[in-house]
Structures are given as structure tokens and as C-alpha cells.
Length: 125
Image (cartoon, rainbow, N blue to C red; front, side, top):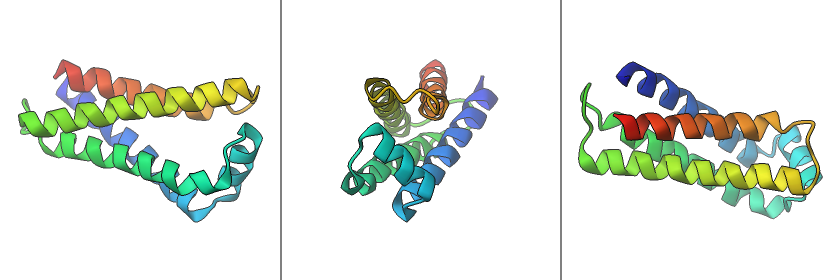
């Protein structure tokens, strides 16, 4: 179980760090998707900060492990970060659904699935 937690959480961290960087850089695909879903461009830095904070919190949770158990504070931070990311991507899925933008629903859906998996595995350890 510990190996699954480490691998899934590491992938979730990398994915969120990468998309936060793309948001901050104003990547063309980010700007196009945001416009299509109806997210104002000035929100992108704030949304990137939330994604980056989630990745950082997951990293704290990961770094607090000693192979079998994490410190209580590190574990709590990791779980809180995973909950935050689950809620964030649930909101992203809702925004896509509200805007009827279904052709790229797999992207927020994939991030949502990673966040849920990270949360479930963090709670199971």
C-alpha cells in the first residue's frame, strides 16, 4: 500500500505542478480552455496558486513518511491538500459541465481521479 501511495501521490504532485506552471506561463491551451469554459483570465494566477499549494501540501505529506507512518502534522497536511484538490477539480468538472464543454472533460477528470486516489491512499496509510 505504501508504494502505491508514494507513486500515485508523486504523479499527482508532478501533474499539478506542471499545470500550475502552464497556468502561470499563460500557455495557449490553458487560455483557450479557460475562455471556452468561461473562466476569466485574471483568475488564472489564483487558480495556479491553488494547484501549486495542493502539490506542495501533498509533497509535505509524502516527505513526512518514514516508510510506514508519517508524522501526524505531515499526514494531516497531505490529507488536507488532497481534499483541497478533490474539491478544486470537482469545481472544474462542474464548470466544464455548466458550460457544456465536454470534448476535453478528460483533463479535469484525470486530475480529479489523481486527487481522489491520493486522498484515498493517504487515508489508508
